[in-house]
Length: 517
Image (cartoon, rainbow, N blue to C red; front, side, top):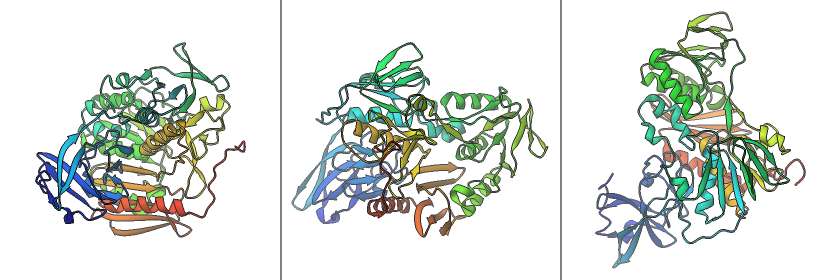
């Protein structure tokens, strides 16, 4: 990609860049994207800082360019990342319009958390419980917005924060080295004065604005973010606590799974969840024998519909995965599992992929409103105005329907953390991001935008077998979500359409909490 397109240092005709247009070229060996917005020409790095997606193939909306791969957003005027999953800015290049030509000259790079002259007033201190997607994104956003107060991020996982989606994909498959997994290099949090406390929070006193840690410390806060995430469900069956029974949530879980398959290369996966099926594909890439046992008739039928579910199952079968559908595990032995119909199958290792439960115990004990998750308003505030919640525990009002939802997606958690951070600083910004996730299984990559709580109608446009299609999920005649295969641009357009539908919806959104606030 380095020297593709025109040499922008030599200039291009201004007429080649119409209003709202984008063009990818290069300066030396570096790819550069030039954009014309409101009559002004801007130039930024053309490669997304998340996973290297080509921004020139993305979508420009106003002054924001969206990456076609995982929908990270950047401000074309500054290069700043405005929405996760990208955390680092792209370089900004200087431009000059002279004699009807556009020239791109010097590059400006900066610290990833540069506040660019901003200075934000806010609480005396911020405590963040959880260093996953939501917690780490919140801590970084506070610094990017110019907050100079104390930030403490608490998590018992010594490795956090890291790229959790990769654990069931490339890292488990052996195609991504472990050095790719940490979100930030050593010393990053110290450099930006974000304290990492490797501990658990034992209790929260919302009246005293105080948290007590498992290491004996007590921390006071001006604002608190609960981002405790979720824990994998463990089956209540005989043998579920045997040492060769695994879950896949943390880096240590993934390391243990990889170590286990070296001596026990036949794996039974309980559950056809996204984690379970991504793990099945990753393990097959390592040559591991995999059997999936799942209660549903077709994997993902409830989430993606019958046709997409069948297509994914067919791809897994082509790659050697065996399925026993309509079945569940009744017991686990040292070298086999017993199904609910009495069938026994060999199992050197068992991976549980039957879902997760939100970790709401701290919130409940603190007296916060909890209803199948921590209940928040549209600003992500809990029933206590100085306590926010984000990520897998967060039950928030969907701006499109007014219904409360809890969504377990990495990018949703990151964006909620970013919104909560800005609101701690007084932005009063409703969380209105359209949910997004992606999955990669064997040779199929699916991008999903929106949220369909229940599928009523599925419209399929294109050819699933050819990996070129869009699936639209409707309820009451309205599109609630869109999944695409091989149509990155269409996925971005669907995301924007869903955003605009939310903005113009005539429904009254739920904005208050159960106590009437």
